[in-house]
Length: 198
Ligand code: ATP
Ligand code: MG
Image (cartoon, rainbow, N blue to C red; front, top):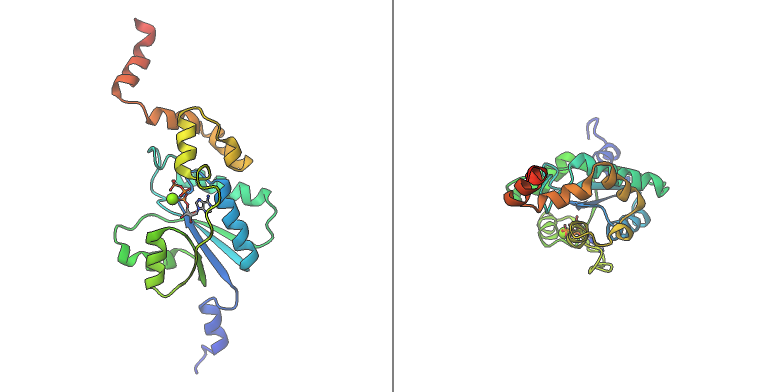
């Protein structure tokens, strides 16, 4: 071998440190995600959290920006006293699923294992020969981004389903009224704007 000894190659491929990769949209980060993150921390030396669909925001399904989601995750991890090294990386969608794993690899530190129960994510990593762990879904009726967004929109109770830091971020960015406004149609907006003139 030349200067690339096997030891150096090991470093290049990241096999000396066991890193786990977890991807979600985190719209918003909730307690189900936190349980998965805790599991990663028990099973890996370092954890990488990918924020998927990073380019999206201000829609009913993807209300929060990548930056707002970085805040939710970073503050929660700092407050939870995790002693493992962690990385939070926004990742934009690639409109070509066959190349998606390479796209992820290009954006993240090298990793050995993927944690996901999403059908497309697990299929794409399986085809790429990556070791996949599919965590058990906890209390999926309530610990679901879709359900939490629904409750925010309808003034239901959602604060107990997410970490305290996430409640703070959503309040700071006026997230509740953003989500509620995104449900309105042109007539609603027009009526609201002209309410004081009639
Ligand atoms: P949405 O309803 O918006 O899709 P979600 O709750 O599925 O929100 P995602 O950001 O899609 O959240 O989650 C990413 C991954 O996190 C999922 O593919 C799943 O593997 C895991 N996950 C989500 N909710 C739970 C849960 N309650 N328990 C365990 N894992 C979960
Ligand atoms: Mg989902």
